[in-house]
Image (cartoon, rainbow, N blue to C red; front, side):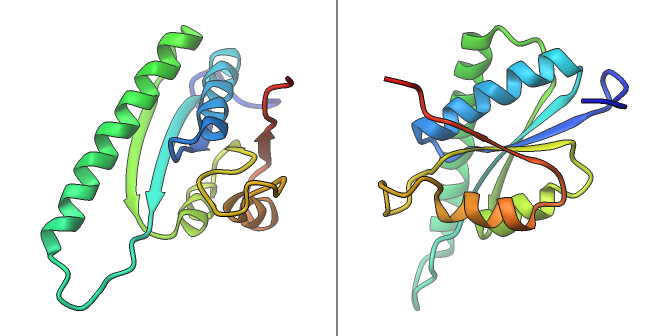
Length: 147
């Protein structure tokens, strides 16, 4: 990353637990190791609210999501042996909107080809497509492993 002073860059990576997002997380960690950047791992989700829905459900989901993100980050750091600063953020909001907003001021936004959406045959998921078009920084789409 040209012009980035070691330790001052920021790489945002979207994580949803899918294999493509885990590959993106590992790629972001390796890139951060090379460039001296820090990583912001973002796990965002949006649950439709229903009348009479318990507010404790949102708290439970936040806690579970935070634990899941922590496990995914720990596994990725262990697998890549990356020695980088990683910030973890769990956000209850639209994933694409969250990643686009977080991309402001970032050096890179890193995503997998697709996540847990319903169209597995699509090359890019809906979140990745929106981010490619509207992110405020360059977007890296990490391809699937060759078989």
